Length: 92
Length: 337
Image (cartoon, rainbow over all chains, first blue to last red; front, side, top):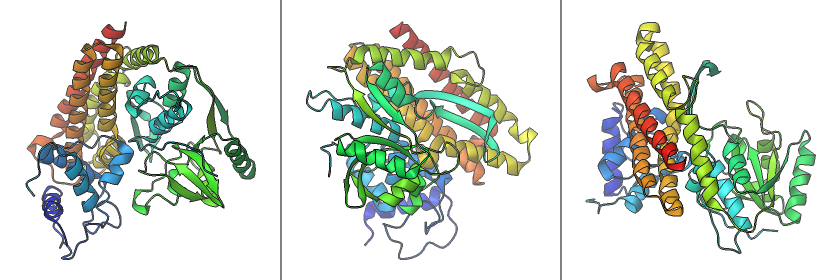
């Protein structure tokens, strides 16, 4: 089941990346977020928006190039990174 | 056989391999160096816009020093001796690796990361300077401390051999290296001062207009003219190329500024100089500004630009980065001179 933070992130990503295609109803939190296998059809340019969005909204900064790829590998890895690094308690 | 090697994940492979290899040598003394300290002592931070060097027929922009420089500068700065080897024969390269492991030496290898099977397919890309440390062999599998991964990984011998001899630009040609001799203790202060001074010279005393902090302004001026000089398709290609080099999946150029900021915080403690803390804040500000620029550029490429994302606005953002980094590195030169 998709958790609240993952759902919140999905909604934010759809908005900032201006995704107009139909989003699969049963999207897995483990699906690739970026790349050819991404059900959202996102690429590395969208990744830049996502990285800045989570910094603005959740106060977490993705700092390293290679680690960054792992952090935004899926909705789950992104949400886990926010849960463990957010300076303020999460509302969701 | 598996060596007693402490694996630590890092944000950047060359810095991670460098610090992990050095820390292995000093494990009995308890002295360690962090990834950020390695990046700073290795003069990692830089900027260069090189329109005459083409990657995929588009200009090259770099946000760090050349690959390999960090390892060389850190080891030489700390008085550490290193043995480098390159090979023409795959068999000889793998046999040499096995011999070093049998002697109990962890071995750094340069590889084509695309060919390493433990990389998830979506994260693979052709980059022939991916560094890792081989720390053991069990059966036909090598045990690898790949700093990009949270834990040790295994790699079949045939795949590691392909990765060590990946073809293309900057082919690794079986390159491997190991530390052969270290001083009794790590004398960090002079290496930190040297690293800061050299990085600052490269950033603010560089006579070449497209290198260093001045180079960021040079890029701003060029970028502002792109819409008048090229059609929209080519302009988008130029922007896309730049962002991928800056923020390859969101973290490159900005990320290096954050890492240098972390280095300055550690340096402030080691050198006992609080002024380095305020410069650290400037580098964080620069990293954030680089990312703001990348978002504007990405929106242009994706056709969702707003009025705030114009080419003039992007150029101004770059000029802000240039000014912040000029101020920061001038201050650093004052501090270490």
